[in-house]
Image (cartoon, rainbow, N blue to C red; front, top):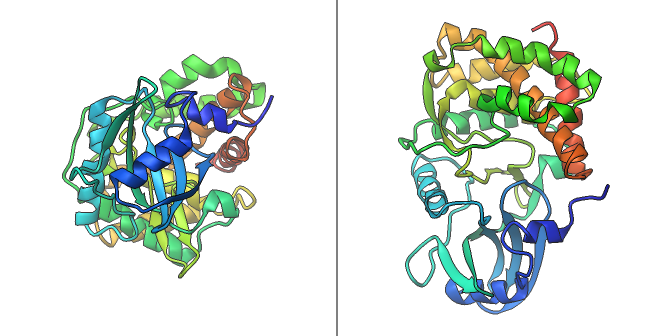
Length: 331
């Protein structure tokens, strides 16, 4: 098995994609000056992200995967504008091309290439730094999530295997990739999750993926930037799903497994200060947190066993999921 290569990221668009040609196209379409260099960002499981350096500075180019529909690609810009209007701090603003659009499309080697561009935030994600958010940072991120929930958008849902609403289906499809220990940890959570009345839970528009790979701490001033409002997961779901992802996939420290209850209570208290949760939501949140840990184990195991992914990202996700399930057995 080998780490996910740069070539596999190119394959999401098309394997023969010439990145220098693409970067020159971006520089011209968005008036970014002269091309200097580029680096493929080798994290994430969806699109192709490129750090482009031009004579006007650093930029982040998101090239949408061929599997995405045109509507999904357009949706990315709609969401970004709505989130900024809601006052979410630090979310990078999408550039507008010379054609007056966020989304730029062109043909390269007979293939349709669709992309958008934002400022590149010079800093590290929590995944890259290995750090855990401080209490102050956790409070800030929960407050920003509450602002996201003010966005009045709703779209047809796009299937995303990492979404906990698909826990049952993903387990059925990928259980062969799980070890005996994985089965023992995941199954009790799955059975409990299946008994919940998800339709009865209050729903809002959510980011859905505020995790260790989607928050950047700025090197300049330490500010936090929530990135990547993916058209696959940013949509209307139970609002506690957002909180569960924050707790399990960002706030939880796999090296310290004795404070999950405290994290749940702290997150609930912070969110309640802006939008009080119903009693049913507070009772259901611990199981949603466990469901996030379970989906991490399922998907990371599948990536390792089937796709040969032993990248630091996949390893971190798996270890986080296992540690979380072990720590929350009594929830």
